[in-house]
Image 1: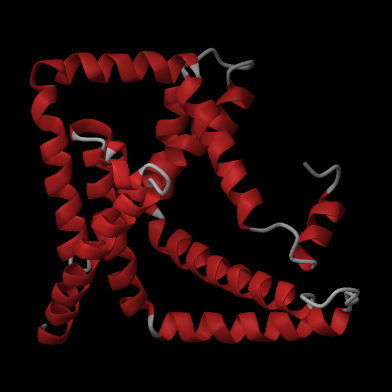
Image 2 (image 1 turned 180 degrees about the horizontal axis):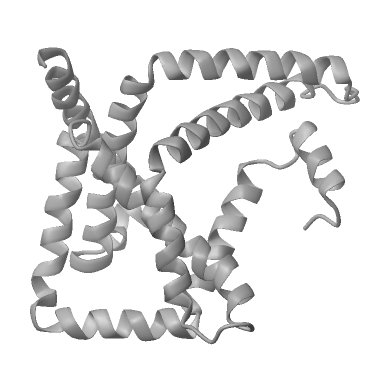
Length: 241
């Protein structure tokens, strides 16, 4: 995408490396990860082990998703540990494995396992770093692009510095209210996972006639209906204890 680090850094400063590019990179990495031969073999092995009771797996996943939505604030360390293990595993398979296999002939999943364990062990540092960077860059991009909504507006260092100052302030505020952000985030995540599991494994509600032109409305409705009471429950537990 970019021929040099300087070009990439310039795109960051100009707010050109936006949400679409981040999403595209994540999709490309995940697609490469799931289609690698080692991962396909590992997935087939896992599916073979659970094949006899696969019919109940979606309902187990729905129950776990509801736990995430309603109670994850109390179980947040578990979610962070598992999440960073998975991210580390994917990065280990996608980035580290191809560098090691020409030297040592080992399956890619071993590289993923090692990196995943390291990421899970230091998840607290990775989490706060990722949280701060995500908030800072999201606010920076939104502010920077807002400056240039007028046709013919020029890119200047002064405007970049103003956007950076606003982003730093947003990070400070985000860390002050981090518990509230986590409540909203985990409520929406768990609720969305419920809708996703239902759609993929039980009933594809997008086939309903009134959702034909707007298939995303069904997932959004389920997510909102579940996320609101889940956030209320989590907040009441937070204030009680």
